[in-house]
Amino acid sequence: MSAVADSTIMLRRNFKHTVRNPVTVFNAVLFPIVMALMFVYVLGGAFDVGVKYINYVTPGLIVMAISYGLGATATAVNADMTTGVINRFKVMDVSRAAVLTGHVVETTLRALVAVAAIVGVAFAMGFRPDAGFADWLGVAGLVLLLAFAASWITVALGLAAKSAESAGLGTVPLIMLPFLSSAFSPAEKMGAGVKQFAEYQPFTPIIETLRGLLIGTPSTGSAIQAVAWCAGIGLVGYLWALRSFKRRA
Image (cartoon, rainbow, N blue to C red; front, side, top):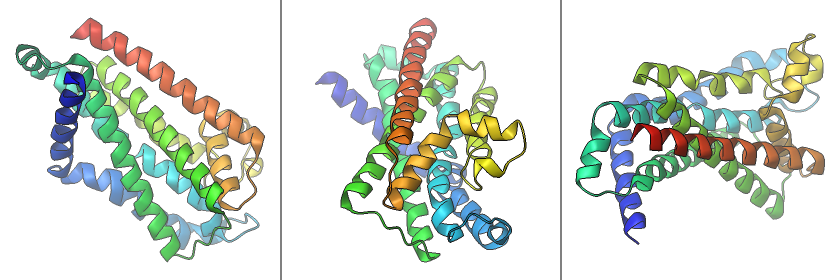
């Protein structure tokens, strides 16, 4: 119960830091919306995807909304480790697990807010899915799983970095991966090399699973790959973060 109470306090602390930092709010929530407007209204006409472009691109925008808020978490985690905050928590007898849990839960909730915002904007731009109630539950479950897994790997990156600047840079691959996937155009239309990378990187099956759920025709194969990738990323992030935290704290 003490660990739960400490985690709640850490969660409240991290939320206050987020709200007081307009750059974090912009990167996590508003910038994905700007990217959505740009891709749909500026670049969307250049892509021939066989369906209405907003319907095709929304799953990729959902994943992008999750990844764009990760840099702030990595920077905040690293700052806690390098500015003496952890030593103060030790003096106050705060549960060590609560420090990591607070960052993970706050990042996950912030990602869910960003996803809700991007879905709302997508509907305003003409997004009309064919998903039923069960399909929407699948979308919600996969989004939550991805956000949770991405939060753990981001916390691990923040702990492993030597400075806050390098911690933020460590999340750049997570931000760029959606652009090198089937998020904005089909992988089969990409050039050699890029096509193979897009087909086998982790975000493509996740995006394809979300796309299948939203159009009402989910693929079991893609879903299994998506869940496996999320579970693998989350497990690696958790074990890596735990090891780094024990070593540095």
